[in-house]
Image 1 (cartoon, rainbow, N blue to C red):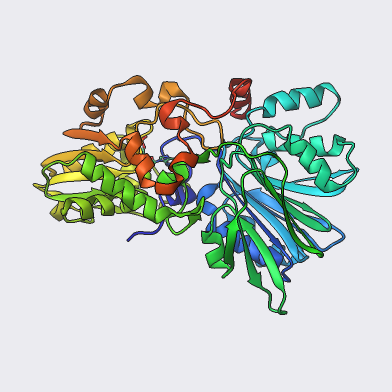
Image 2 (image 1 turned 90 degrees about the vertical axis):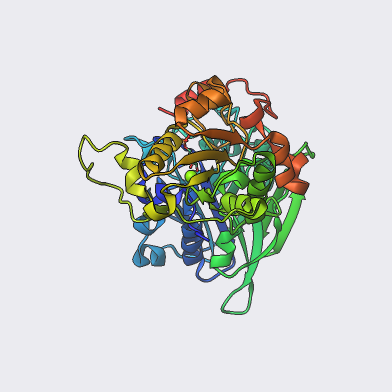
Length: 485
Ligand code: 5GP
Ligand code: MG
């Protein structure tokens, strides 16, 4: 199976992908390891698919925080010598993808501040739905912001807190936040992580033995980061939980009462790597089930099943096993598509899709094909791929999407476009079929999606498929229009 995830295409070709706007991130933290900066580097490297615009690491040697961050991929931002300069046994890291722009580097995380609580650095995955509101309030009473990201309100709230301990100041600040946050915070003498009360975004805690025989703790958005550094997963950080690690050891506490969980189901549909466990469940398992249930719900006579690589692969394999049809590699993905490229010629239609995907003529020609993709957002990619398959002689193309129609935007950290650009928000399935040029089109049902994530079903957020948001969204429109500038 092709394990490289679809967002790899963003990694190597951020500017050639389907003009999709992201504000997704990966976070990492380590405490108590002599090579903390190296582990953070490797952790971020494994989380690269969660964000490709900028990367940053901050370390603490017990006295001082040191930062290195920049625009680009993890491997471009850090060198061996920069990692060496990041001294200390504790580190946090962040990888981010958002809109490009002249001030984008200002938004690179972690953010470090010096305040009455000492030096603090923070990295955040998720979107605060009241971030803009809080920012206006803080600015009105004199706070000066450096960046346009919502994350910056957190250190500002902490700096203002009358609470004297870091833990209490953080707790007080977190209680003012609404929306999604999985965050890692580094002070000189401790690492604190926290996850919002509904657990929108993932965050796991793990451990590993250090070369000097001690125990180090690690935190990451996805467990694939633990695999790379050979750490062992302990548990998820629970929604509403704060974990503090210092020289005194590890302590876990609930900072807020339990709320109904709203863990992002799109992590299982598309966003996380299949080799991760997310929300306590294997992503690979969910994806294969998505495909199996899709096959049960929407069978069609055909000769073979072909995936849109890479993200469509696990669902296509599931579809094939369930339907008894052969799974065939009929679309090949070029993994080396560069950041900058030369547009072949003006007249070459769909050259962007062609650069990354090419049909295998001998597999496609004359065949009735079930083409499986994980999601259909704007519909433009699917339309190009269907056209391409036809050009290579496909007889019939039956498009199968392993999630329900995406009808509403996400305000919790996955940047689906605004609903005017979401094809399913504006057109019927039949109209979308016509737009893509497929012979038939079927999406997975919401019930099918719920079944695929099994025991997680009642603990997920499905807002992008239902329009039912688990939080109040007052002020969100202003926040998104501001943060997209
Ligand atoms: P569309 O048909 O909307 O143009 O594109 C659908 C394709 O985009 C699918 O192959 C799906 O894997 C991919 N996709 C879905 N969500 C995202 C996302 O957030 N970022 C990127 N780069 N691709 C996405
Ligand atoms: Mg894809």
